[in-house]
Amino acid sequence: MGTWAIAAVGLWAAGTGALAQAAKVYPTRAFFETTRYSLPPQDGHAFSSDGKKLLISSDKTGVVNVYVLPVAGGVPEALTTSTGSATFATSWFPKDDRILFTADQGGNELNHLFVRGLDGKVTDLTPGEKLKAEFAGWSTAGTTFYVATNERDPKAFDLYAYDAKTYVRKLVFTNAGGLSLSDLSGDGRWLVLQKLHSSANTDLFLADLSQPAAAPKLITAHQGAVAFGAFEFTPDDKALIYSTDEPGEFTQAWRYDLGSGAKSPVVAEKWDVANLKFSPTGRYRADYINADASTVLKVHDLKSGKMLQLSGLPAGDLTGVRFSDDEKTLAITVASDTSPSDIFVADVATGQARRLTKALNPQVDEKELVEASVARFKSYDGLEVPGILYRPKGATATNPAHAIVWVHGGPGGQSRRGYSSDIQNLVNKGYAVYAINNRGSSGYGKTFFHLDDKRHGDADLKDVTAAARWLKSLDWVADDGVAIMGGSYGGYMVAAALAFEPEAFDAGIDIFGVTNWVRTLEQIPAWWGSERDSLYDELGDPKTDGERLRKISPLFHATNIKRPLLVVQGKNDPRVLQVESDELVAAVKANGVPVEYIVFPDEGHGFQRRENRVTASEAYVKFLDAHLRK
Image (cartoon, rainbow, N blue to C red; front, side, top):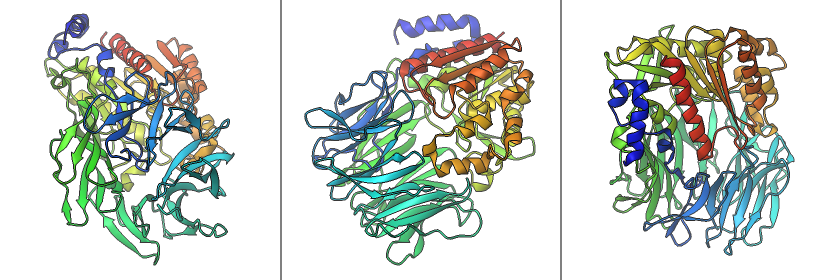
């Protein structure tokens, strides 16, 4: 470890007593001197044309850039060198070493698509102001790639086909609006689109691009509220694999035959089927199951009928499966509570895997980090509510830990197992963290998911305050100080808890949280399209539900807030505007309540730059130490 961690133990010992002595205590920065690794999206090529290199994204320098990682092992080589905006790998070209990548401007989410040529020259393929572009996949032949942009109409994404040699593009689908582009068949003929009627009710439409005059066809006629989504087309372009919760509580994978229109089940589990991915020829299929906030991966050999048995992998979430073109090698990411995502490659014939990266800071001993557990409690009305519980090492009945209720984003998100620099840092400093999955969270069936519809700031907030009472009932949790913390919708819950249940928590950390729902819903970016209608259905339409939305907006009730508050905000956030945080901070200061405020000028909705993430996390610990450990 060296003197760095030893010095940190001494610094924290005075403030945390025997609890901090129970484990090696690291400085905050140590948890962020990890390296984030990720593979391109599943519609891009992760393997180079010769199968010897992987295209990855990494924040090795502190800012996310695009790298080449040798499959045989070795040091990643940078292909982009951004020092500002995060830059993410999208795809190799199928026949040579050109790449596609994407970046926005300081977190404003207005991504453009770029190509890096063989000579290293970078070209913006989607130039223009205030447009958003999204990569939409490759043709099976590799001669065409597809891009969706909202340049014609900010509210609708049209689809363009780009020639892979000349980059000359052709408009292949004009979106009349109200539909979201979901997936495209490899032959470029079939486009599936989604219509969100509400958060519980969606439809899929199929457009035949060989008949541009024909309107997209509804393929999910149904009664009642049913959610449909698209996974992907089969590699032979004969069927669409889609998701549906029509048969029961959990999402299943079904097949729609493009020729006959026949539908048949493909994957059904006791949890949601979260994703499904085929290998290039369709011989292998990877199923991702969201099982109690962890991902269970099943890779099927459809030719032999057997499951692919992978070995040499650590325990954790196995995600991001990408096959090489010859289907002899697969890349996979593995993350756990105590280690960030690392990239492995496996020999498909043997299943033997090799590690290519080491994401965790080598100065941190993984054994000193805390493995979480799934914990459930009975809420105010008897409903069993799940969450992810982190217990600090050394926390006992005679040496209890102060606790934090951590609320995820959304609405409708899910707290999941896996590495979090912020959470591990807090736990290492002696704080217990309970990442609650209050009613309205995804992953526990559609009934649970919709229990808070138009009851936000009420039913879900009561779960959160019940979690605080439950934590205090545990003999190893201190009952004289519990904080609440969260980002985005979770940040809203922080402000709501302090405003509507002012005695429930002793401090709050609001990370770019909504404070005025009327303004936030009115300011939703145009490119959200039908997602905005879905959100209106779940939360309320500001034109017709303004009174109720003001009632649940903490800004209009800020005079009730009397507990210390820390607010953190990105200046370029297009979802929760900075004014949301500005006004809350001013209102709480007027109460004479301790308020701290941090604004990052180069961030949006979520912090990408390592230095900013370190600054924020250091502020969290300092704030909690000041107001919980009094």
